[in-house]
Image (cartoon, rainbow, N blue to C red):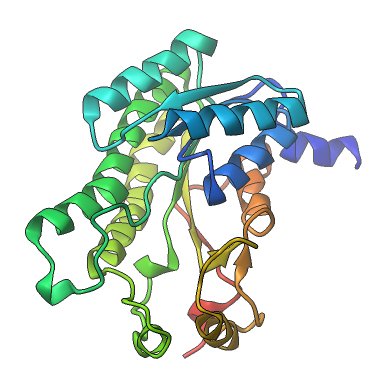
Length: 271
């Protein structure tokens, strides 16, 4: 690779943090950043998983990786965790806000769901992202530089055809999950307007359905989803999100802010 391209995508000397970085898309993001030369912190609600993934990344890529325990729904825990990163390296150049997902409160039965379950899912997927953006934003605004990448979802830009789930014995996506991910996209746009004058870029990535070799999705659902996708397949862990992460983390995206990069094989364009 020519040095000009290395300057666009190389991250040597940068300090990154990936929330929910121990598994799946978060681990993919962490792996892409480590491969590009960044030292990084990865967090998980399960510190054992964070430690295991940190050791794998450090050994494979020769970078420093700090494992952290983080419950991003707890604002004090968020503040203390970012303080640990600052104590470790004294700066933060990149935040990938990936933590979220279904969690124990996930429930596809919206009309019968409890207010507590609804609030818990929104706290995990939206409020916690806001807390992390706030702490990273303080650090990056003081530095006059930084890149925040929020992981949203195509759930935030379209409604689901739940017949695909029902015929494969699945309960379907929680409606409040879609609301939270739409909130992440809105947060990204307005936070970019707020922080960009301070030298901080804010963008988000909206992945489509993604699976790995060990995914336990019903084969019929995998077939139905792939048929509904122009590129004819599910997204794959270990592969499909990494390029988007590198683009938005490096200097290649220095004139990009407030954008939602959809990585879904075209799923959202077919009607």
